[in-house]
Length: 552
Image (cartoon, rainbow, N blue to C red; front, side, top):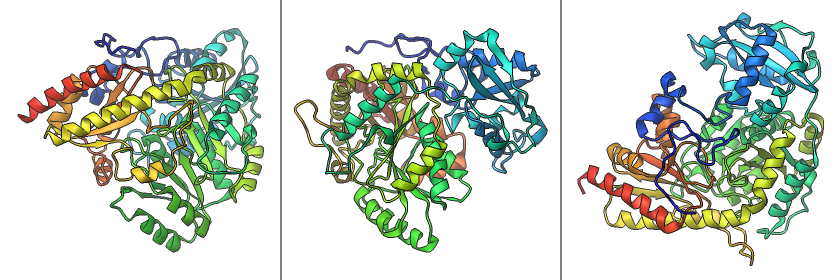
């Protein structure tokens, strides 16, 4: 694939653009910040969107149809879910003390309705559009809203919408047990084939011998965040206590944990100079009971790899669950099963690879001392929410996962190595963040799969760059001729001023995260499948703009 000058218009997806693409191109640092700040004029220009951030496309069309069927006021919006727990989830979120005026909802403002569309039951949450910021997190953080493909399927059944005899205001007690039961989506051969593919990847070139995994230990979800959310609640049924997280992580994950009812403890600094494992042990001793420790391996966007071996030792000693999100490292490169009780993966990213379908997985380790209890709770609580059309697309996309990953690993490593040389020549770059050049590289390499004839593991597709000044970072970003926006693991390279975009609106939170490396002067790059020489050339040209801004 050859790098060419970007011609994609603002608000459109990376090509090939289709009805289910999940990216959007926002060129320019200022446009990203305008998006972050809710610029409505900018939103009106969006032709594509990341589905978990907001109902869009077919999902938005279906919401309009349901809105009319349910007789909602024009001042109201509508969110649709497959699980009856969505109602209590909405109450918990919207009425939390963490929501502040003017966006905090009153109980009477939250409306609940249930509809059957053909043979699919939807639990619809109505809310005042003026208070959207106080409820939209129910769609964003759990990631369990209906998918674009499911919405498109249901729109074809528009004449078969029946309102289920149930009505409650938001102030009523609407636990799942009090509601008409769900009609969950059927699991198809595509679901099992996806599980079998994941199973083959987990068993390919393991780091060490482990108990045999089975496909029934792999659970599929509509998004990576849904896998985290559902797993979180399953664990809480088995092992209560505070949730602990180590290092940088996806913002939605942080927000989810921040609202955990039994408390949340975060250890930010996790590089080789930190004493994070000693601090964690001291905390566990004082706390007495910890539910689980969550870690991204490596972390997004700092690409730090914590000491999983030591974490496993502490978990065995103090009896807590270890959940490892291996999305950034990816199945093909790393085997975290020796350290994890549960592995979480966003299948939306490198596993899919084509930015046109969402998905997530949770994998139970049969060697875990918690396996029996976790398996029992999953038998009781897991119900399929992953649409067959999404499973089919994910299966087709993942067929060339190893071949694509070879190129992604190569491109990112070559770019990281090149950027390292620019530090030595005193450019505007102050630091390259990538697993291979991190001071935590030994931690990552301890879990790299051994090479085989068919695949040589690497360090993943994601890297970040620290710049000496904000002006230099901005000049680099604006001059970087690649697509701009969220996502990683796509066929085309994507850059993002991740920290300023995601965290910059809340200065207090930003200062906290800056304490362990989340700097505003940082640019994240998720490499694609372009020719490595041309990709380096594009970055080199952008660096000239940054150097000029620094007067070098």
